[in-house]
Image 1 (tube, protein in one colour):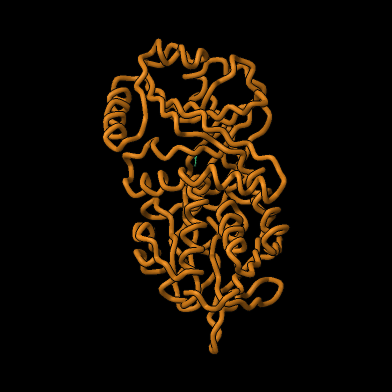
Image 2 (cartoon, rainbow, N blue to C red; image 1 turned 60 degrees about the vertical axis):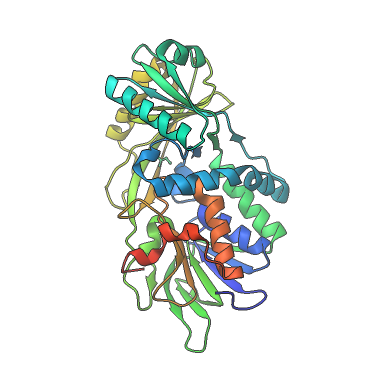
Length: 375
Ligand code: GLY
């Protein structure tokens, strides 16, 4: 994959993934141009709660847990570098998560998760109802127990994305062009790649497609549309007036992220409604019901805002990261579904190693785009 000493790479998409990849490629010496159809971070990224929790619901996919755990290890450096290189502040807390159970079956599931995590060397602790309420006094009487995982955390995603953009532009020579949709990617007959946009054609040595839910809308010469579909998530921003929560609380039907300024993010719906980015009464009501059942004080919170994002889902809920089978110097970094923020530093590292060192990390096997014919 490495094409020359200072390859000219076009990154399509400036969400958290595109910005992290662009920054890493630029830091490692590539000349990077980023194309974005909206504003930087204006897609799913702006609606993300920023939870970093690879060990919650990790029984659903062993591969995702492995990738998430690897990426979590990179977060301290990832944020520190973005802060230093941009000169901006980024909210980043590793205060843990408390996953609560409200009935016997979910308590049994937490017990199984605890055993599996301890066997894998992940620190965690099962709390009885009264211990859980001692840890988080705002929990209601419906809570029968909880699993505490101290290594988890959360980040302020909008500030982090802005910091990556600033770091990329100011320190690593990355240029950003917003409001320009990419239409088609093709190989040039004499080498190099071309990206056709609404504002003309760009030439480069290589292309990274990181357009999230919109990746399938960028045609790739010789390839079928990517199997990436939008999955709507609605997220409430509330002004919390109860006892401050000490950590992320994961409940049946929702999660809660407590910001130090007293506000609280409550997410998120999971809706298969195509490219519909509206907030709905039903979505907000479902979130309010779920959060109120576990944190009764949430019913008295102030309403600040609702955000809506379209997560890029794939048929097996795993991302698409790696070289395209149909275009020689096209690399995919998309389809991260519910884990885009968590997996951003790992994706950036894997893509840069592939493109600049020609090194195909074994971790790429589970997310190889070639597992789907179209890619
Ligand atoms: N990453 C959490 C969500 O997708 O709702």
